[in-house]
Image (cartoon, rainbow, N blue to C red):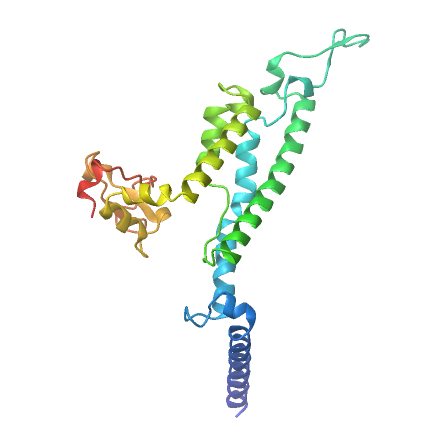
Length: 261
């Protein structure tokens, strides 16, 4: 009898909770907020979107730390002038002089390390702010359920190839940032005039269809080199039987993708 009463109480609580969620979803769906996001037209509910947004945030939250760490490895705005002066005569330390460029590399000078720490904190804030702005624009104006954040991959190319580890590359940090800014303006321009859409149409249809399939998202794609070599871009889900293959980013080009399927 007691067990039956407990089951009835649990059922009653579950029913009341479902009823509360139903009323909440109905209320928001008919509000200005629900009409703006077209919840009824898209056959979705507020709680569904809330769960989806939470899952998306938890999936992308690592970017806050990863992006800041990668870009900090470029050295950022830190330079030799941030290094702590070295004593010419350590016992008396009567005179000091600035170290050479080797102070930026292990063992890192304390002054340079402090500058890197400050830069990393600034980059975390910048990553969060830019992601917030991008997501707000995408949600409020484009009305699309997409989250925007700095991409993983291009930041590594920027940090380790263009600028180089602690500024050891071919371009200074500020010059590289200016190039990225101009690149962003260029992409904005070609999107505004419709050129981006025309370029997207040049992508072979098998490849574009492949990337748009629901069950084969980009992180879940990889090549099987032992079976396909470099002549085709056959892809398999990440959870397929080829579990020993390392995941690779799939990039389809017109010529090698004639056999995409």
